[in-house]
Length: 381
Image 1 (cartoon, one colour):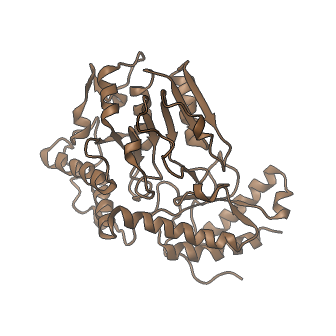
Image 2 (image 1 turned 120 degrees about the vertical axis):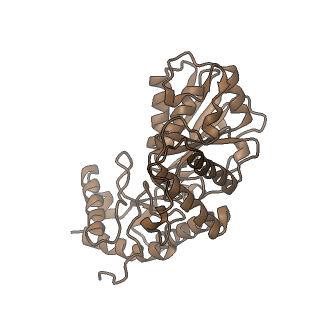
């Protein structure tokens, strides 16, 4: 039967993600709209986002952090275009965004000394095959596969190359040893429920040293430049930014950071995401027609939870019919106002992707699950 109780919020999109609980547009009342982002008060507000982000995450003291254009994509592209080429590159992928970085390194930067390590959806590549005399580029959490790294123990402390990590969908939701990483990128639109279009980047002293000692041989657009004439552009890390930022987005980012502090900081954020994963895992364990796309329980994402339908009747369908049924299930939930935007990513196997980051209430996740069962029964015919 159709359930009676609906989630507190139907927003389960994997980006932009749900706003924090109780968020209203009034959270932006103090935004410095109509002011230059280079005005003293505006730069101070921007610097607050940088400082509070670094503090909340517990980034190493000697790392720098800044705001850059074009969300996490802009941040990771900036890192690759500014830093790669000095030595060999190993690039890892196990879902669509990681595959994009593989394509950029091989086809756009055209690095001859690059190796790719690619795994199917649901799996990780062989981490032991990675050579850290090279630079290494990878995602921490596969947003479109629901597969995450268990830890960073496979990265040596005495590495010669840089560890460059696209950490969006992981930062603020997972325990990460940032000392193992030389470049960390993320965006506000994921775990913190912020707005899109701006990214953040953190660099270790080793990455900063590379910028001062190496100049890429290719032309560099302004928004990709982290250094000029082998001198790090310090403005990026001191509130000046490369280009104009939205002061509305800055205000919203600060609101999210202060909410995070109010619920126990990083520990509270991680726990909320873990609680959401636990609710889904308990349901999957007792439901015979659904399973995680991640094949290893230790690599299940606690943010972008990807599920596949494994019912025998469904598995007997053609790939086109499977995709049609999965879309019908998602459409039913949207029509009922129960869950928006929970279909699998377009390049991923058909199924369900439930965003379960820290801004999503566990009560909403638990209310959603019976509705998924109802929708599944409805698409059988």
